[in-house]
Image (cartoon, rainbow, N blue to C red; front, side, top):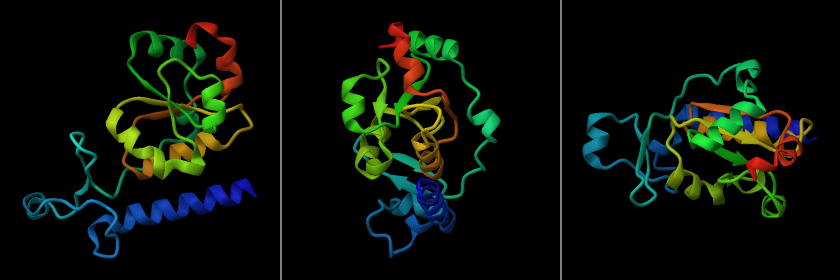
Length: 174
């Protein structure tokens, strides 16, 4: 059941991204490009969240294979957390996030992604390295968040497959 929902959500998001829905009058919720930007390149979609205005093209390159997607180790996460060279995104519920998460991680639960995106756009650029984790290796939330962010134009992401259960044992990351 979860797999079917994930597949349906991914298909809808991919369809919207590929159709360039943000440039059509039917999608009046999406911020539109200024006339000057639209004249220059009508294929640009503008996400305007205050001072962190983001411009991006609706069609994005294909996401990497699962091998590349999951190619991040606990040691690499330690280095990224210490150097602050990556953004960690916790794909668990807000309740689970509140009970413990990796130091500096942002919460993006699959059931509330639209509500949490302004915070993501405020703190993360589309080309910044993002490491996503969820509860465990059996959890699909990390993949759902990955697909959603890819449809939003984020291009440099990895999923930490073992998830929070492994990260929780690394007390130096909390």
